[in-house]
Amino acid sequence: MDCKKVSVIVPVYKAERYLVRCLDSLCRQTLRDIEIVLVDDGSTDNSGAVCDAYAAKDERFRVIHHTENKGVSAARNTGIANASGDYLMFVDSDDYVHEDFCRLPYECAVRYHADLVMFGYIVIPLQGDKTLEKTVSAGFRTRDEATELLFSGYGYGTVPVNKLYSKSLFSGILYPEGIIYEDTATSYKLIWKAARIYCIREVLYYRCLRMGSLTIRRKTLQMLRHQFAACWQQCKDLSAWGYRSEGLDKYRFDRAFRYCMQTKMDETDEYYVEAARFLKEDANIPESITWKRRLLLSVFRFSPRLFHLLCWLWGKKIEEP
Image (cartoon, rainbow, N blue to C red; front, side, top):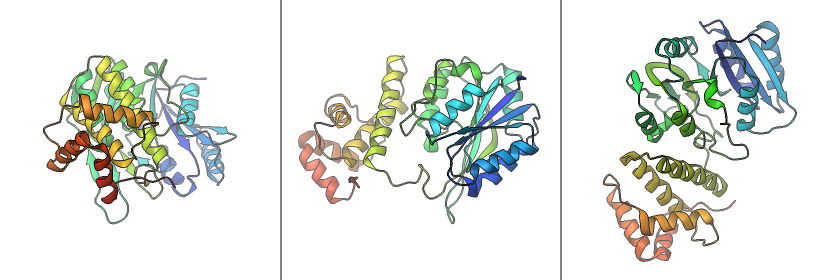
């Protein structure tokens, strides 16, 4: 297999409605020496056939079919294992990209000897809402500066789709399978492994929110637990590695507070126990939190039962379906 400059990995699952737009945008890439690895994750619609049709007419496309649905992490890991490029990029099948999506980050990586390049993207919400552009200033980022981007709104540092990675970063790191919020569980590890990180201002990715997507789906208790587990492990690891910042303190407080606010008081829930202990004993209250949260935290420390009653009355709890 010939080595390519960039491998673009696209997990595909029941995306027939949006897939052509996504693949057409990849066909228009100005960097020609690339491969596009489509991983059909057991789709039950016509997505697999669409993937095969693109591979038949454009030699840059390769298709791998999972016989059953294994989840986005497994699909990405399959793509990583089969990629021939020196660098890796990821695209979600319901999104689309700029024609220079591959070229500009690749040229930047070569010019600055960077093994991780981040770039801007636009969030396109449901009909009627305004788009949201996520960019940062161009230039090198230290590891700590890049880590702080993990805690920015709409996940500039966390999402995998606005980055070009040296394939070597994934040696020993894969996306965890069987959980939700796999990006949260992985991106910080890649940032900490990268020796040279560079950001460019250009907007190269268009992230399309739709009904049913994880970003806007109404959370279930299982989703909430997966989210807390991934976020909490991230906080533990970063602290153990010596990272300190106000952003991390605020993020950790927010995760613990939200978990206790949205779940019931349950001493058999290991995540609740850990979040509650943190709020009672360890939490330094961030200066930027609202007075309502300060008040609720005081109530929680005085009487967790009263805290949970107030959250239930205010409709903050997530109930089992």
